[in-house]
Amino acid sequence: MDETAAHTLADAVAALKAGRLVLMPTETVYGLAADASNARAVAKVYEAKGRPSFNPLIAHVADLAAAQKVARFDDRARALAERFWPGPLTLVLPAADTQAVCDLARAGLDTVAVRAPGHPVAKALLEAFGGPVVAPSANRSGRPSPTTFADALEETGTAAAAALDGGPCEIGLESTVVALLDQPRLLRPGAVTRAEIEAVVGPLAEAEADAKRSPGRLTRHYAPNSPVRLDAPSPRRGEAWLSFGPGGRGRWNLSPTGDLSEAAANLFAYLRAADRTEPVAIAIAPIPDEGLGEAINDRLRRAAGFVG
Ligand code: AMP
Ligand code: MG
Image (cartoon, rainbow, N blue to C red):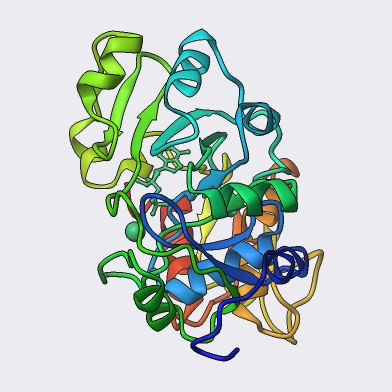
């Protein structure tokens, strides 16, 4: 891609449909967007950001009607959406359709974070694309979120197939994240204030102490029922085996070609499928701890119960 060029909306829609990434302006910060239903595309987002773990991503939608296709809204959620959307408020709700926002995007949770951004370019893209897109901040992991087109281009380099220039971000601060799973809970303070939210749904509970450091951990991450055995070059009797690479046999080869992005895309679906066969254990082939492999191994260590 020409590093300085902005693309058209049509370029961006075509890129999303082809499973490629798009630099998308929002009123909060620039996001690196991908088709939320396409696990291969979502894997590319984690890869481009260089995140060492899979945290759940926000599904961006055009409006409340689109949000109701991916999440289950109760009266409180509807009231918040009606008051603050389009705008910088993200709602964490029970997932309605687990295909629309894929397992990898939800980090395997049965909840989903949704938001309808107010930026006209984001709105236009979401309407034209017609489905939810994940769009975490376009910075590489550990760096500040980009709030201008130039900064966003510099951060993403060649990762985005199309880049939309929406000018400087008006808010420049991440969205407020509120969970409506039991009592309304503030997971991340942001552009919409606590008082504004409490005026609609009443007092907000705090995120749990541990969840505060990493709000994605509030809801327990998906863990298989079967025990998980890591670094298994081959399965033992009665085990289901998630293999990896050209030598891998069996039903669940995370990537026959040894491609980490393909392995990330298959990871949650294969864990679930293997778990459903009620094996003695799920044995998992060694995964190289480089690039996306670091996030895959983090996830697997959690599945194996080594990390809380
Ligand atoms: P970002 O997309 O980088 O702005 O961050 C997304 C935020 O939403 C993070 O704080 C996540 O932990 C949080 N989040 C997304 N999905 C969920 C979910 N299903 N449950 C709890 N928190 C979530
Ligand atoms: Mg960020």
